[in-house]
Image 1: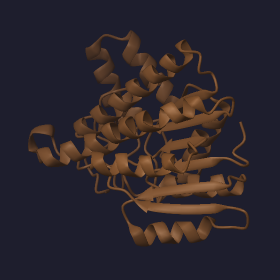
Image 2: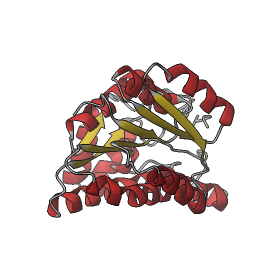
Image 3: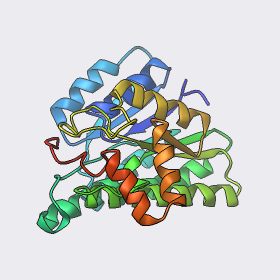
Length: 271
């Protein structure tokens, strides 16, 4: 699929990979780009960066912890009579590197709200219109995480939230296929640590280098356009996933510990 002439909606568009996705959509010829975020000034900056002749760029301040705000913003899009051709569920948050019992429950709730409940609600609101817009190809890219594939100490709420959205996303992909809606393809993306500042201070595990935002965004974007069901980066994450699947739990835990997975968040200072 090409995004030339497409309508694209990106959440968490003010920085990191979201900002890169916005530029990618503009560079590849999207005619309508809708940017959602929490920071109005940052949204204005990105809007100005990706604006260009023949391209409509709009932004909206949307608090993804507020279900009503998600509903209203989605309804406003649909009232224009056009469903997005591309939905990028990029927004995400991580609270801290505290043990689960030391973490503020409100912070854990926010993590689940942004990382799991918000993309579920938004996608559910938009999917009927995307399904009905036949035969125009549709793409949904949902950002999960390598932590959705294996447990990581000091990241219980984050890993749980990403596992939840990953399994939901894959289940919906299967539902779309079973219902014969082949023009809608859903990609679940599981990158390891990305150097956006979100995980500042984190140590990348052995054989799993920290991804640059540019590299991470490129992998996810290309997988989405190709309609691939799942993308994982870097490739070494596959090895950890396979080891967890075939080894006894004690052996898998020991391997992850020796690779530095269990210590990766001890010095975490990111946002």
